[in-house]
Length: 387
Image (cartoon, rainbow, N blue to C red; front, side, top):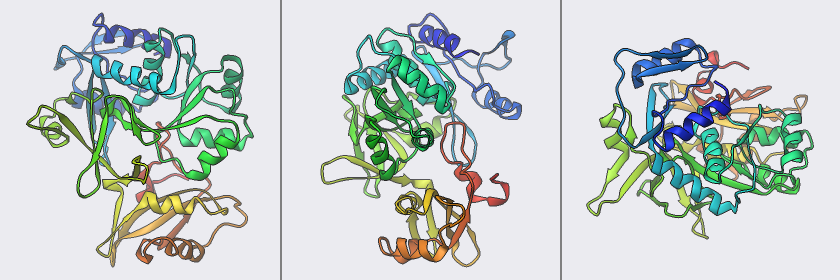
């Protein structure tokens, strides 16, 4: 389906003129599509050839406009049900925070089957405009930036590619950066290149980014459980997981005063200015010899080294330690890659020594999901992770 056609269908779903939508990326393999249809049971399937009724389809609640398919670490499909009210509250709060006006264009470079791309459409619609759709490439993106002077959402991998090509980022009115952790060196380089960077944190369950530069959007609120798990509440919360009341009850906690909190899968902390900082995911914590290591914290340290272009840190099975801390690294200079001893020494100077990598996996590139995030599941099992 063409993105512009999806934008029209989404507009209809938001105001009740059309059915709730379950977008599926056109490049999704057939077995995955079939798994989504079995798990989420839509009433019909729309393809370029037309609309086909499906047996066993189940309706949604009246206010549901969108069901976003996501997967946990197991790959099991989940359907995040989002109401029109939540989606519009999120989009309107976003454009208010960044100061986007009704005449300002939005450039969509992200897949529209995922919440980040959908939110670009919603922000444009909230301001009475249609977004401009482009496939991401450095040349096409910078040509659109020069022509439109747009707002745009990027993932860190896209931003790194623009910077590696020497792009001038000043034509963008603002770059909303999310989808994965943004390392400090990337933010500094982007700002040096003229970019107005706004870091965003959120997920499908919060209609996308709901915390900008560590501060929740208007109406949203963030707190931490004693163990550091991030809790979120406000008008942008999802309604529940489709056809899964057990998972819904685990993650949507309703208090006696009527307030509902979403128990995220992320670990966070508040810095000295009260801004929320994400340490990593609960399921990304590496248990090595009974000690817990947050892989994203180690990766952030490694990314500060001049010898490291990109880094992801995962736990791989280990008979002695349970999991071993593994650094997957793209070297800045393939001819002079960092050594494991150098990485261990650097990390041990900043974190407890048990957090230092025990294995170094050098790569030409980091395997990515369609969303632009590192494919953590594949990297935990190197035999199935393409280079």
